Length: 158
Image (cartoon, rainbow, N blue to C red; front, side, top):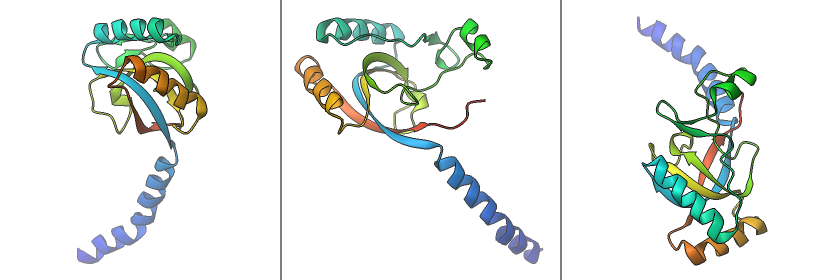
């Protein structure tokens, strides 16, 4: 029985290593300018609208609304058009970096505490001039704003 365990370990370890390497390659580090984290979608929406108006940064909700199962989701119609199962939520940072206000769900980000709606004013690289300028602008009104990094899944979503 001991030999079988050694055999299994020796021959399957490379498979698990390759799988974990492939899986890790599906993520990329992004930086997020966070204005607020809250358990309340309504509070996040109020903050996002006020922040957008007060600092002159466009509000783009990306077609997402609150969903009791997944935190946020695209509409049933959009999911059907894209041939994905409803509810569906893709974290900001996959292909949509830049300076704009959005509400995201923290469960989609590995380095964020789970169960929060987060108001994000910018995403991309904190070294990008556009992100640096947005951070300065936001900090004038939202002193608790901060930049936080997280990995974003870039792999296949089917």
